[in-house]
Amino acid sequence: MTTSENANERVNCHYDRWFVVQSVDSEQPVSKLSPFIIDKAIRSAVGSVKTVRRLRNGNFLLEVTSVVQSRRVNKFDNLAGCPVRSSPHRTLNTCKGVIRCAPLVDCDKDETVTELEPQGVSDISNITVKDDSGSRKKTQAHS
Image (cartoon, helix red, strand yellow):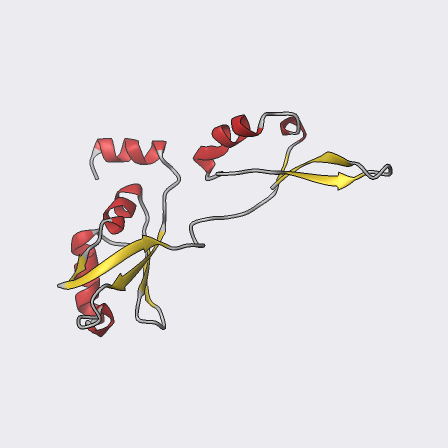
């Protein structure tokens, strides 16, 4: 990895880590290839990835470890001579959680998202509760 790639990775700490690689041509399914050939093809195209798993439907699930690998896998169109399509996994690249922070209660939503974006936050909403009068009030928790 070059110095500029390392610097770029530190700036963009949030990237897609999980990808599904699937065959495009049913006449040449990637699932019929030897695991050794698949491993060599992935290593030559991307480098050493964290995990590679064959799914029940014959597709592959790849976990990458860097921004550079993420970009390379996203551009996959051929794996060991088999035409493939690669796309970020639809759920494994996201995470939901609750932020409990009293100082953030009155902060602007857009500002909070922008400031927390490097940590992978893409959206927030304030959790509200009904008070005794039946109206809703903000809590110290954001989801």
